[in-house]
Amino acid sequence: MVHDRKSALALVEALSRELYINGRWRESSTGARYSVHNPADGSAITEVADASVADAQDALAAAHAAQRDWGATTSRYRAELLRRVFDRIIERTEDFAALISLEMGKPLAEARGEVAYGAEFLRWFSEQAAHLTGSYAPAPNGGYRIVTAKQPVGPSLLITPWNFPLAMATRKIGAALAAGCTCLVKPAPQTPLTLALLMQICHELDVPAGVVNYLPTLDAAAQSRALMDDARLRKVSFTGSTGVGSILLRQAADRVLRTSMELGGNGPFIVFDDAELDAAVDGAMLAKMRNAGESCVAANRFLVHEAIAEEFTERLVRRFEELVVGDAFDPASAVGPLIDAKQLDKVTELVDDAVARGARIRVGGKALGGNGYFYRPTVLTEVPGTARIAHEEIFGPVAAVTTFSTEEQALERANATEFGLAGYVYTRDLSRALRFAERLETGMVGVNRGLVSDPGGPFGGVKASGLGREGGASGIEEYLETKYLAVQL
Ligand code: NAD
Image 1 (cartoon, rainbow, N blue to C red):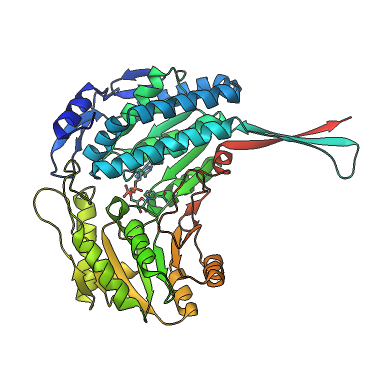
Image 2 (cartoon, rainbow, N blue to C red):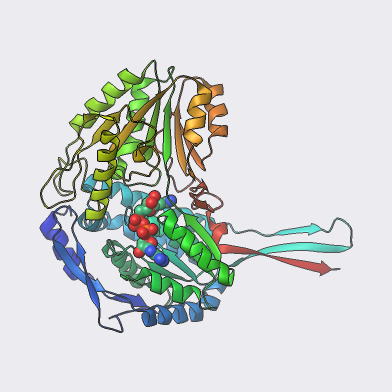
């Protein structure tokens, strides 16, 4: 059933809004709850349990107790269980989409896209689970054999952001479970409801007690500190800002924990003068406006060859003008609100700062007004290098266009950032595309393509954008250790 806002709220009422620990729903030990808001109008949707540190420790005890049996299950069993979760998510696409739209704000059509993308990680990792391999080889200098086998890392803390409430979690949960790790999932405080439904499905499908635990909290710092100080935890996987990622890396150092970090980006989008302009504009719309720009792989800095800059900008402006900004449940909406007042203030500040320093607004340039956190799709040109927007991640529907004249200049500017998550390059010249992509200091490059995210591709960054890869053939490795046996014959 396709939901409207009223039926989506009824769906929330039917959902357990407690913690999920050791296969049971339960209240927070302190009885604390907090409100979840709809970013389209700031209204309270509901309240959810706020996990205390003691709750998190209970969940870790459960995950630790379940680890041995879960790690010893056959990979075929884990594969089939993940596949059933995938099927159930797909069956309940409309329910997941409604929850995502309600708590995060993206239009229903986009939320459905996230459900398909998010579910796909479970299918992908179900296929990976059944293909775990080891090796057997003669030692180069001796009469013994080198045998290797993969083993699960152990109980893992998975901390997720609000921008893709389902997909950022399934990309971790799928890999962890496929590898044989138990886990504790900490959703972003803004978006706990989507994962409450996922937990319900795990429960219905008999995922064993303690294998998946769910701990929404307003005090993420205290929770992660306590869990990471505990010898039973073996791994932290985090998606979010670089600032929090570096705090977690410092904490992880104390106990030499395994880590995976998916952090901030500052994606360059380069358009050469021989690019196919229609494709470049389509790609720009996708790379910039997917999720209202609230994506870590969003195009942040448009670098366009001076010969085509005006034409590219005019076409982009026309496309931005056509975008309808509005409530997720209005079928006409193409762009939803930003997540909260803080994010709206940040986007407003970055645009105002650029304009004060001489940038020109070609379309948009301000918030929509009203109670929701909507910002108008905005194109800026003549953005000076001193503007904050030229260096900081925007995380909003704002395209800042600057020009270049040579390939070297484009490369130098594209790489002039501490971040290195995704970049995009548009040119018809294959040699130039590959040459440029190889020298771009990012973990991912879209070549004549504005979307890189795919469960089958290794997602991750270089420089301050992170450590490790999620999805792709190597995604499961983040949750595996290699055990080496030296076998004397
Ligand atoms: P954030 O880093 O504040 O929050 C992300 C998550 O970390 C949330 O679950 C939050 O509760 C938790 N958290 C916050 N402080 C913590 C602490 N001290 N210890 C443990 N957990 C803590 O980020 P945000 O503002 O919610 O999200 C925006 C940022 O996330 C952007 O910079 C964006 O680039 C980044 N992001 C990156 C990716 C990626 O895949 N690389 C994906 C989405 C978002």
